[in-house]
Amino acid sequence: MFSAGRLYVVGCGALTEETLTKEAYNVLEKSDIIVGYKKYVEELKKIFPKKNFYSSHMRQEKERVLKAFKFARDGKIVSLVSSGDSGIYGMAGLSYELANKENIDIEIKVIPGLPALSICSASLGAPLMNDFAVISFSNLLTDEEIIFKRLNLFLESGSVIVIYNPVSKERRELFERLWSNILEKRRGMWSGYVKHGGKLKEEKGVGKVENLPKDRFDMNTLIIVGNEDTIMMGNHLVTKRGYSFKEKKL
Image (cartoon, rainbow, N blue to C red; front, top):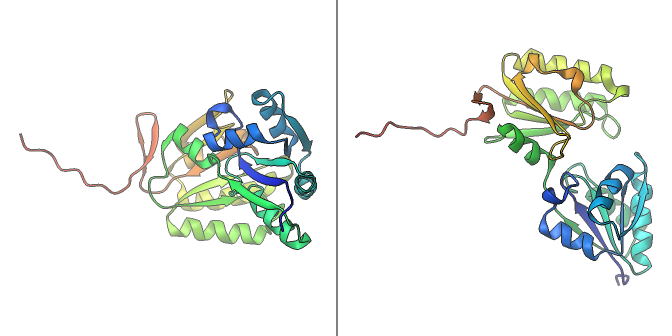
């Protein structure tokens, strides 16, 4: 039997009011407490200044989930927040895993959000119009050998590649090795990057992959590596879908 409380795992887009879905906004509005990573909570406080919040630091994801469980078991309506979509490198999976492991009798509902890849793709143009693959370069939860294997398979597939968490101060060497693999296979292909996608301080750029300013990349950057069908149309990065266009006869 479920406890009286409820846990929502909410994707919050770029943590701005403009990128919150209506459903996400309504759930946050009715929650008794919002739980999340400290930087995300600071952004949400600007939208919901009267709400109660609980925050913790990076790499304390398990602690946040367990705290959210406790609040829900105490009968509260709780929102556990992620940026983007909570089911894409977010908190949804961990919530289900810990609930299963700890035998927690809490009703969990995942609220989807606007994913970073959609926000950043729209900012650049339309680079995800055909098949694409998504990868994170973070080795915190994934072995480096697996990251290399997946990246190389994605490169061989010819898909456009979306890269989350490309580099941090601790992972600069790993990033350089991964980037070398990309240059080997995709040199000369149009690509782009977006930092702080969907926010006022958003920064973006497009160019041939070898000319992208990789020194600007960090954990707040999303990179889209194009393929042979990715072109520039004016200032927009576009991957052709495959439509044929015939001239109309007058």
